[in-house]
Length: 123
Figure 1: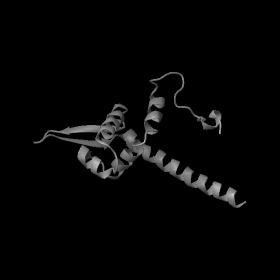
Figure 2: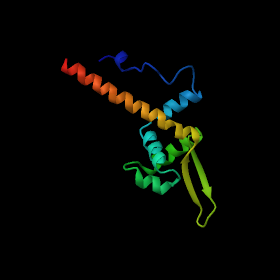
Figure 3: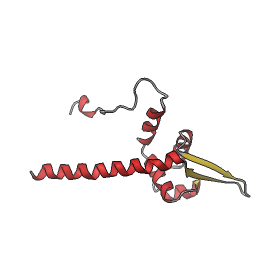
Figure 4: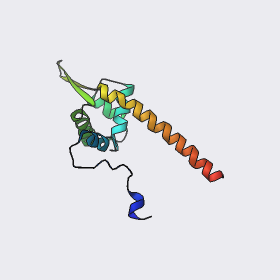
């Protein structure tokens, strides 16, 4: 397989950095982003330690950086609850919640594609 076979048809890095769509596509390509979003779709309003406990294998550093990036892109909301001790909860914004449709569409396409590949193997 040569280099051309490994290139993406849609390259999210086009015409310079800093474009919102480019940034979000790059963010969603990261290993733990989908897992964090899916967890918050199931249980919205989780504290950091709760998220960390529910996502097996993620390091503190990666979770922290991922949440910060998701917050910077307005996909996750960080809410400080003025309580003793102070609590911080993470929840999805409207845009973050809308990613559920994208995740479901990708899953449906993946299933169809695997079926297609299976048909190719049997023919």
